[in-house]
Image 1 (tube, rainbow, N blue to C red):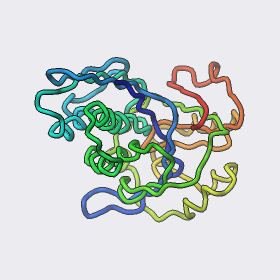
Image 2 (spheres, rainbow, N blue to C red; image 1 turned 60 degrees about the vertical axis):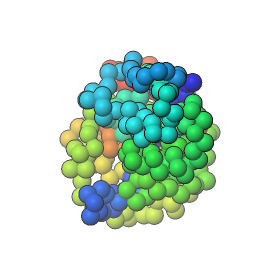
Image 3 (cartoon, helix red, strand yellow; image 1 turned 90 degrees about the horizontal axis):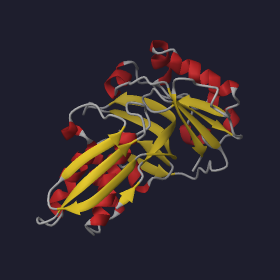
Length: 270
């Protein structure tokens, strides 16, 4: 069986306060985009995981796909196991949720492959054990995200008439580095109200709290954002904890002569 874990963007990201458990309360709009990895599973006598495409740094045992398997393996018949192959396309440490998507999609694939009949609520609960963004990718629909990033409220937001350009400046920013650069503060505007306003006015209302401090440290982030606006973006922002920047457009843009040496992707909004 094969599936295609997709990335997401954050439209706004407010870091409200630090919790007693060490996490932060946030609020954001999560919106799926069609930049995809490929994930394949097949039944086997013993577990095996391998990958191709982009090199995945760190200890393999910390890979969210393997963690997903470890969460669900007790529900799989003892005489059966699985081989998993990941073709990695979505950049890592980029604020796109690619690793989180891989983990969540692995849970969904294993559920389907072994006919475990776990519903979305159960899968979301399991995904929350993998990481804060992971539960979003179970239903994979636009949501207002709050709490520490594992609680969602479905919203009516359809951007399918727009196109998106995603630019990764090839800067890896860890979550720890991103949070170390900010001071939590209550937002000036209500995100759920702001998202209902015309997109051309989002720039003054919808912001990512990580963006300003990280752009000071990595000026390329601001440079890319300004270039997207120069190309005619209706709205542009850094996503997640960086360093990827996206622009939402109402027209097609030829990016071949722009963003030389950077990793780019463009497509129709879902």
